[in-house]
Length: 394
Image 1 (cartoon, one colour):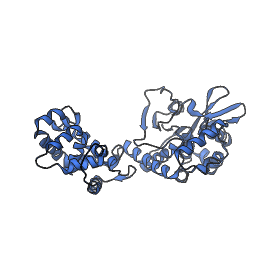
Image 2: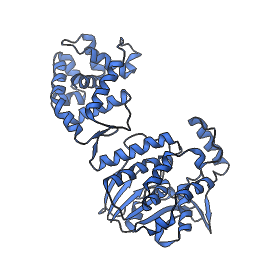
Image 3: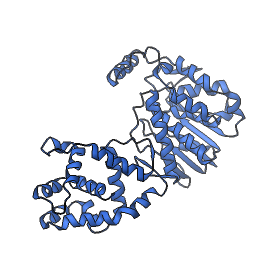
Image 4: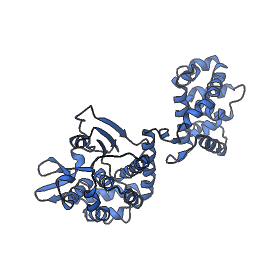
């Protein structure tokens, strides 16, 4: 039996919506869903088989849908001050969270689904976890536990239900893999948002676990902005497709087989061009031999790994959008266009801190015979040297 396990993570939860979209695209079926905090919210939508509502929720998210009196949040400092003010005054009321969940909570679809569902919350009164299972309670009661788990304490007020004082399940287990195992999972796909919270050691090592974790930087768990959420949906989708071998790359995303094709096309020139410049000068050879990547290239080791690392670092330096799905040929052309637009300037102490300017300078000075000044610069910046070589050969 396959389980989807969704961790806590607040505003990072948009990433899980992207994972859900990819799971639907891949036709991956599942028998169990467990979730903590925001994972509990996204989780019931997966049980309801309601991708549309999940994407709608995150693409339209804003502070006013969740909090009262958050109209004037304009920057991170204001946001932190708002949260601090609410915390010292007992936390944010959960009425708007309740209203939001009520709009997307469909008891009929949830309970007609054959998929098991479990939520982790925490009881502050008894300092113990509460495991809420769909099969053991009615829709109204289950909803109370979903709201409690999804509202991070002490940012939100605790939820009082009978004798329980309920808060975010991240105080017990933010990634409830063990709960999924208890429900019968023999295989787990765990979406881990790397947010704050306790994590329990997996109790059964025989269970196959596939982790999906963000390759890109996500926003703070306290940020609920639709533009950031839209980007995180793309990250979640892309990373899931990478995990299941449909896309390639790390921070950047490429179509299947793009990277091996890029390697086959340019690796020989990449190695020979690097060797050509390094072997011109024995002193530089001694210096660069101490830098692993250059040494590996000279000796034809780990070439594909180094090329991929360089092309992604170039994407970062020249500010390519990390959320897009690229064809490698188009990606290389964009890099060259960005390089061409970068002005060629004389390198001084200030300019070496500008990696775009530094790479452009080295690239523009890769002539048949290098000047001593260029060699000196290469010795100081071997990473940028290899990136300039990559740009030279593509």
